[in-house]
Length: 312
Image 1 (tube, helix red, strand yellow):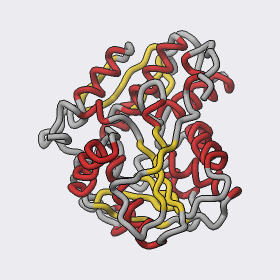
Image 2 (tube, rainbow, N blue to C red):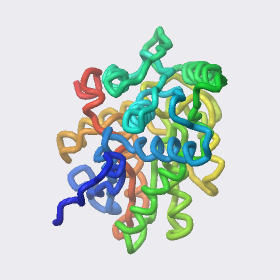
Image 3 (cartoon, rainbow, N blue to C red):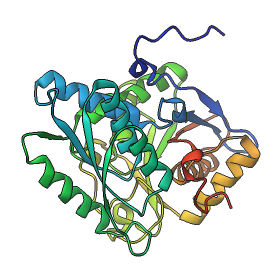
Image 4 (cartoon, rainbow, N blue to C red):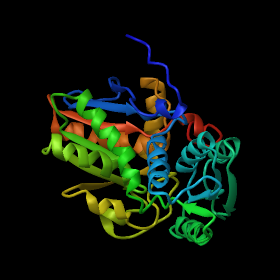
């Protein structure tokens, strides 16, 4: 295996992530299950892809200029990725976030130069009104012409970055993919991948996922949950761009237990949303049976969640 070429910017190390086949956790008689390791991106998360595309597309349109401050509402992964891109490009970055999210993520953003505005969550959980209140704050700040609000939930520039995952999967699976699943927050990742797979593998099933305790897409009601970065309290606008998708609700405790199994049985340290992805992928693998291929993603690294209860 040849080493990667020299990168002239750390931004050029985003993407081209590996895929591994899961072995020990996949029951006999199931389809093959593969997971794309997005933790190999610079901040350890696939959000690096969309952060770069949102910033660079804004620069190309002339709506983001040096001297301006970027602002976003984020649970931390998008914020870490935007803080990373802003640090490389020399922009200040203001984050509307909450103490409901992992301390590691908040510290990561600060380490990269971000300024945080924290909304307190009395329960320590993601309530239906938490992220909308953070978004409102970011919108109000972004109305000042000295700021550029990236608006990740509605910004179609994010899809450009996420389409890279789909393009890579087409190359990595030349014989095709039978099902792809992923949990949704902004729904940008699933939408970006689906747009590519619909052209190259039109028969592939696209399955979007959410926690069973907050089944807005599957049942039309919100709820409280502890899976960071997904189930944001409203149906994400990007999801409208995914025709004929399926939706499933996954129990959060199953996802958390899957994280522990992935670490102990597959050597993969991932966060809860990735555990949720794998639970659904195994369901699909059982349904499809041998000879089929199911693919999902490891959203980020479990190193971001070691201070919490996930791996206790």
